[in-house]
Image (spheres, one colour):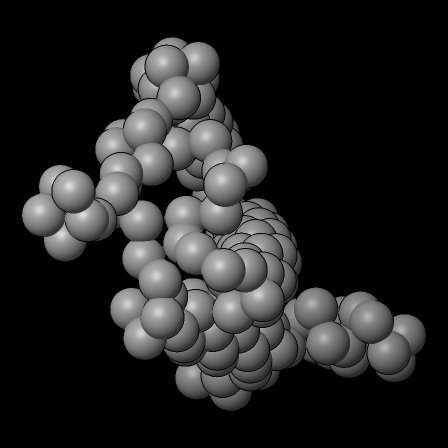
Length: 171
């Protein structure tokens, strides 16, 4: 009986990989919720009694947001590198999924043009993730400048203190 009569070949799922996914997914959600809980507490405890404290707290929040943008850009960059490498491996292999791949679910084995389409999809995804990382990096650089330009009174004291001119002590 030929392969066409028997149906498409299937790469079976790895039960150990499924168990890991069942452990990692709730762990990832717990980490995200923990970060959200921490940030909420961070915002609740910022000093805002005076105008100077309010300005300093606002600058701190913007700095933390910029750090989150940088971290997100790094993660997207790593994902882009992974997808680009995967696309190259798929293109070089005789089939997809690769024989040594550990899958979470059963998957039909792709060969020929279908395998090439999968390799292109992985590379397109890599370029999209790279573009997203570049956009996040751009936002991390431009955002503080735009906020400072939109609210000059809030950032005026920090700039004067940074240049040492003592302009913040004018009568």
